[in-house]
Image (cartoon, rainbow, N blue to C red; front, side, top):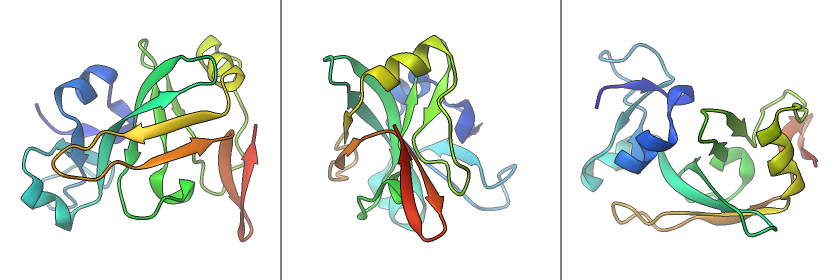
Length: 147
C-alpha cells in the first residue's frame, strides 16, 4: 500500500493496516501524509495513528482511529470515526468551534453520545481508552465540547 493523506484513510485501509505513521521526511507530499507501519521498532520516532473501536450508548460499534500517545487528553488523541460510505467525523477541531452537520451519520453519532473508545493493542502499543461527550475544540485556554 502506498502513502495516503490522513484524511483519505478508509475503514478498509485501517482493516489492512492498524497502525499508520507520519514519515515527515523528503519522501512525502506534506505533513498530512501517512504510511502503513509494519514494525514496532520504527514507531518510536514518529507520530502514529492506531485503529480504534468506538462504542455508542445504543450498543453500536464504529470504526476509526486515534493519534496514539501516552497522554489521554482528547486534544492529543484527536479521535476520528469513519463511516462505511467514507464520511469522517473528527472529535477534535482545534481552535474552530465545531457544529454537528446534518448528515445521517453525524446525527446517528450525536444521538449515540457519550461514545467510549479503545485503541487496539497493535505492535505492542498499549490500548488507549476514553469517552467522548461531543465535538471538542479549544476556546482560549479551555477545551470545550459541543454535545
